[in-house]
Image (cartoon, rainbow, N blue to C red):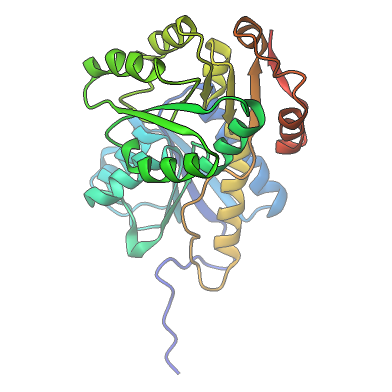
Length: 313
């Protein structure tokens, strides 16, 4: 009987070789790789051999599409995703720490490296139903919700409208197509909103725009519900986010399951399973928000990751 080899087969007696490609050398990428290695070693000792490289150092021969001695590539962040798409490795690819909108944009453009359909993602942003649950817990008395959308996040407009309608919220959105549109759009939305919900979009929310957005929301006395710890530390009243370590453990689970399975199929793209909720108590107090003693919100914080609430004093 003829037995066909699986296109991504690994010899049973040899460890699977995993390449982590990081967008930068910053600490959160390093923490991701370290935790992923720890988790893989703990769950399947000696089953995996790992290598990590920043995207800027990925060798020219790998970028050119030549074969590489790896069984899976894990691309961390949007920049790494773009480098890997140019490389187009002939092995499965797991994208992590990437916004859903960026992943889907690469997919729609046909530039996503996905050999034989074998790719998946763990998004860095939170699922909208989770964010709306936090909105309901923290701001139940506020009925006007503002959202700035950019070229990539505009794809979520219909889901936003559906969820806002279910919670009886009046949704006010503005589309930012160019950087110069940001502040006028923000002013227009804040004039009609009790809360501003941030949705990951590289044009709208980035290191160049963060200060202006935070200062403007504070001037309007409108609390910002953000999607990263950095925003809560910098001045957002509340943030819902997943840490690199949390996402790395989820990634390690996907890697382990893939190489343990007979069919060798990656699961569909998914949101982070574990998350944290962080309150900036100083900003909350300045805006007259009693988030620290809000029972429903505190219950969500404690249930989110079996950890205590994190406060920025």
